[in-house]
Image (cartoon, rainbow, N blue to C red; front, side, top):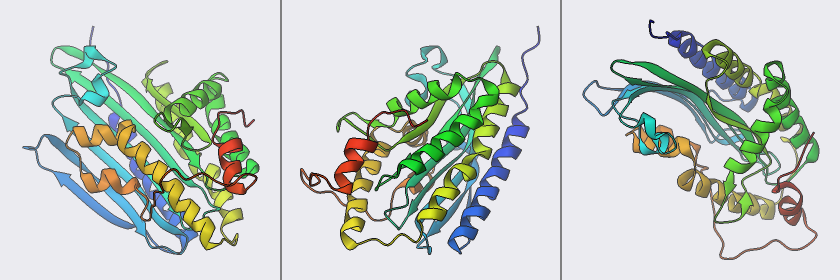
Amino acid sequence: MSAPTYDVQAVRTYLTGLQKQIAQALGAFDGNEFLIDSWQRGPEERLRGGGSTRILEGGQFFERGGIGFSDVAGDALPASASAARPQLTGRGFEAMGVSLVMHPRNPHCPTVHMNVRLLIATKAGEPPLFWFGGGMDLTPYYGYEDDARHFHGVCRDALAPFGTDLYPRFKKWCDEYFYLKHRNEARGVGGIFFDDVSEPGFDEAFAMVRSVGDSFLAAYLPIIERRRDTPYSEAQREFQTYRRGRYVEFNLVFDRGTLFGLQSGGRTESILMSMPPAVTWRYDWKPEQDTPEARLYSDFLVAREWL
């Protein structure tokens, strides 16, 4: 029996097109183009391949936004990828994906993250193994229920053609994944998260990932369009930078994409583009009761059904 073949070039073409499409749409929204920083690793390096980072800093709306595409290969999977899959230890790999994080300046506009990716693990004399992963999640600083419902509704609709069970399962996975265990606190209002998707086959799994990626702008743009001109105070801005500290903590301690990139010898600037540009920490700070800040904790940073 011949080894299975996968149309990796179709995935590569889709991902580069998705990166360009999102950068054009969000750049037009901001009024500033994303700068393109292309990079390449040599064949002698531990991590081979390349990619491009589209970055916007100090925009009219986005304080920082990054949309990265990478297509890299290595001789051994890093520990973050093989820890839960001991049978993959020692396999080579090719990984490609688009990952983005957008940090608006206005604290009434949420931070957003989206990622779609493919990983193929290879070993001489054995068939290659593949899996897709990805998802998107929303991190508000001031909670708006209609924003959360809209975001989750688009996520549900993107997955619906592939099974009505996927949204509840991937929504729960997202709630559990984007959780700061050391704080006993959710990062935001969630969305969807999935990994290790290889069934019911390459083509169907790729179609699902395309549906997720293609739905991102519909999930996020309407939210920032209706919040972009909301007035805010300096105190609200300070709360935003405080909450951004949680984002940093999650990305550096728990995020598998960050760990995979750093452990595999990836490009540090591109990996850490997700970090917000202005962040603060306060010692043992707690919001006053019956305030919008307190309501973020009680009503939004909890696992709940939005639909």
